[in-house]
Length: 387
Ligand code: SAH
Ligand code: SF4
Image 1 (cartoon, rainbow, N blue to C red):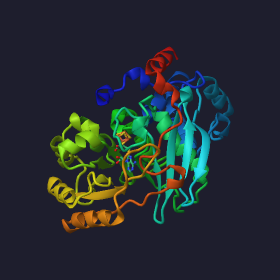
Image 2 (cartoon, helix red, strand yellow; image 1 turned 90 degrees about the horizontal axis):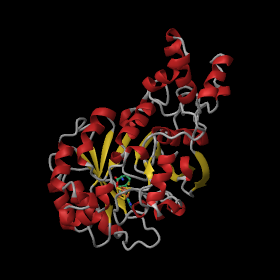
Image 3 (cartoon, rainbow, N blue to C red; image 1 turned 60 degrees about the horizontal axis):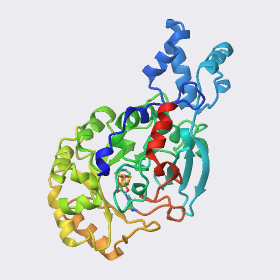
Image 4 (cartoon, helix red, strand yellow; image 1 turned 180 degrees about the vertical axis):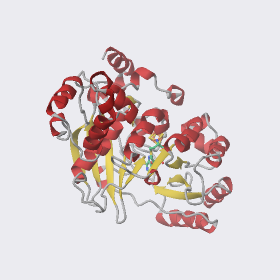
């Protein structure tokens, strides 16, 4: 079964080098300091690290020449040894509602999508963590694209950098409102099958001397990789969202196939044990509304019984269709009465407004055009081994 292949071998996860030179983007502070060690006097290392960090993550500098706070000779030294590789923006589409979808090309010619969603009080960037997904939730477009590989830390951070470039965020006046204020790990892939790279990328995004996003403004969504959930709280500290979608194991086995490995009771136990859990930091349960499948009043009542005692909100997601899918979106009155039952039980139950549907940027519609590798996973694997 597909979920059994989900732990991705290291050779698919290790950072690769586009130019043959190691990329400085995506290194943690410790790794950056180590990278500079060979040619930077010990006494200057922290200062050089800080200067680079500021250039990369405060100013958005994308070339060594632009690192004007560094001496010229040092810049030349860096250029000879390293690269500053970002994902390449292949296309940028803007929806009638202002949502922006970027198709990005990364090493190996693979493509991933990143979506920016502007709202009145915030601007949210939806990041991908994998090319494709090993899981096969049948209502999700990404799930039809088999996993090609995990994204590196640089590629995850790179999505933030290119969005900030496009939004003109680097020249923001002090105190001005950010356009990119929140991050959700809800794009392509299962972030908890790539936990280490996702964690390092989020630590970079949260670093106060750089992009400086608060941990409370980052939400990681998982389909339910139970053994990794605690690490999200302990090592990242961000908010947690669970793609719940069904209230019996029988139905969840079908809708979210990872449930065959990690059952509802163990998933809910992991939620109860989540280190950051409190009324101020509730877990979001995502619930996709599929007509006639999981949207009955009995489902709603079972849902609130199951999560009893967990500080939570239920985020209902009207199903977003894609070509060839066999599900339909629940009717509006069904969604409303489901929300009403959940709400009466004491849980906030916002219904997510589909955004960017006209450009296939809404939840679950992402799928890169990179279909070639799907034909032969073995070929991709051997190509990566050789690189
Ligand atoms: N793999 C992770 C994160 C990405 S999916 C996860 O599954 O949690 C982000 C959210 O969109 C998940 O809750 C997912 O179940 C939901 N989703 C997937 N396909 C959808 C669709 N076609 N319509 C609405 N929501 C969908
Ligand atoms: Fe993968 Fe999430 Fe889509 Fe399921 S919903 S196939 S886990 S991306």
